[in-house]
Amino acid sequence: MSESSIGTRPRVVRLDPRVVSKIAAGETIQRPSAAVKELVENAIDAGARSISVGVGESTDQWFEVADDGCGMSREELLLALEPHATSKLRTEEDLLAISTLGFRGEALPSIGRVSRLEVRTADDSGAGTKAVVQGGHLLFEEPIGRPRGTTVRVEDIFWNSPVRKRFLRAPQSEVRLVTRLLAATALAYPEIAFRLVHRGEPILELPAADGLENRLAQLHGATFSRKLVAIEGESWGGRVSGVVGVPELARPGTQQQTLLVNGRWVTAPWLALALRHGFGDLIPPQRNPFAVVRLDLDPSRVDVNVHPTKREVRFLDEQALFGDLVRAVRARLSDLVPTWSLEASDRGGAVPSRPEFWSREPAPIAHPRELLPLLHGLDPSGAEERMASGESSRPTFADESQAPLLGTEGRVSDGATLPPTQLVPLWQLHNRYIFAQTKHGLLVIDQHAAHERVLYERALRHLAETPAPTQQLLFPVVVQLEGEDWDAYREYHEDLARLGVDAEEFGHRTVLLRGVPSQWDRDPEGFFREILHEVANKTARSGEERLRQLAASYACRSAIKSGTALGLEEMNALIDQLFATDVPHGDPHGRPALIQVPLSDLDRRFGRH
Image (cartoon, rainbow, N blue to C red; front, side):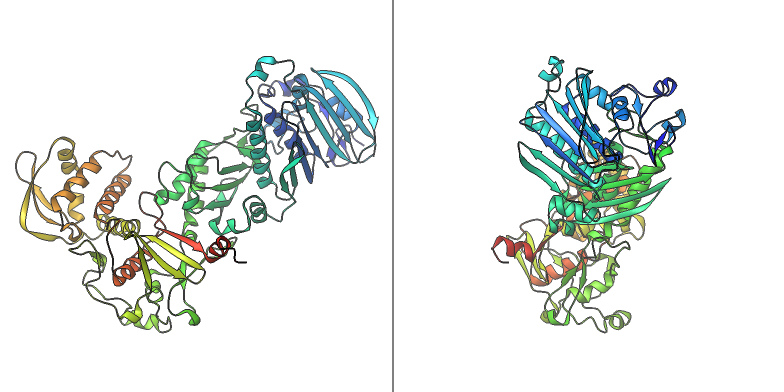
């Protein structure tokens, strides 16, 4: 048996002083939850398959972490209670590729200096040891009998540091921190069983799970996976994987995000920003998506020795990793969009079907043209032939990009009518929401947000490709502009022309408005002023962002309003156009355009089983 190992497991040894000098400042136990974190991470590094945490009335009264890991011999335990003794480092080179969690050896000594610490441990030899430390001094050690593993009990933490004890959070706050810690760690290690007991009552009961999907089901319920989409992609020196939630799960702050780097739960605001960028305009700027993201990277490219708590990490190439995460999220956003299918037994309406949640391959998304006959309840057989011959389930237009537009009454208008038998039965609630029955429940569509999405994508195409046609005004309108609105017109007049605005300077700070998009026929001057005023108060960091802001303003001002009554044909036309867009899930400001209500949720609310 070599000096540095016991079997295949490295043994605890004192670190060389030269290695100690290379490590950041030693562990500082700022709060009880930080001590729990250190002990849980040590248990994972010890190969535990089951970890149990117990808490008394409060974490500063007592807490205990027990595991079934490899345990320690008497000699190793006594060394582990000394500063800078560890089984996880040997040389300076080891600091450049940390592959464990609690790699510092001073966790136990740091906790022992501010508490009454009791450690009971046994390795495979069957000989156990108990040691008690108080205020950093070993009071006694004795042999005991126990199964393989380690139990660490911490009592009266900060008894000798009254200032730190005085500024502890309320007991329930510390318990919540411990709960969050165990939940995040359980997501990183679904193969390990975790248990948390507070005042004798279990708070978390997480048996070992077969993968992240089952672990999420344990934490959030069996149906939660329906609101998640798996992400996966290559990254420099490793891989990106995990899940993101549908836009409806987005919340202020980032508490609903779990970022894992080589199994370590970390905080990294720029990674959270990458997730936000991946969603683009699907969620509002002040909200962030639900996410569990795992980054498995080459340890030599990650520095975990940045902060004593090891919650903050540093990467060799953060910019490349940022882009990789954005691309991994964007690549699967199409899975957030319901695809549509029609069964022979349900010809009366559209049937959404989502791809399998954990499918490794992206689910095929129907081409927008393929959606139209299905949404109108037609027999899909022969649809391709009808499309090829120019026949469609809805009317054709001389300028397809302009259909449907707002008519003179502010409604969605195709310019023609569909046979009633080809219309999906729909219902409008309070002239605001459109209800559609699906095979598995209910689809609710916000008519304003849906029309915004349609007009937004159409505006982007006009700005980048073919300009929109203009509806000439019978009598041109003279518009007097002031201050920022005039500056906005001077900056955006060419872009506005591509959206269908025919205007020219007509003297000092005056514009002659000759033609407008057909959606503006009710109040051309009002729409024109609103657009200028809105873009005048926006700042863009790039040319692309500038055009997106203009397109979003145009779409918001031009879309049908909440409170506008729509006929059945108009509602069908709007849904057709929505599902022909690239991202029908939300409007350009991040608000959802549609929500799916599963039939199972309704059954549960009404007590059906």
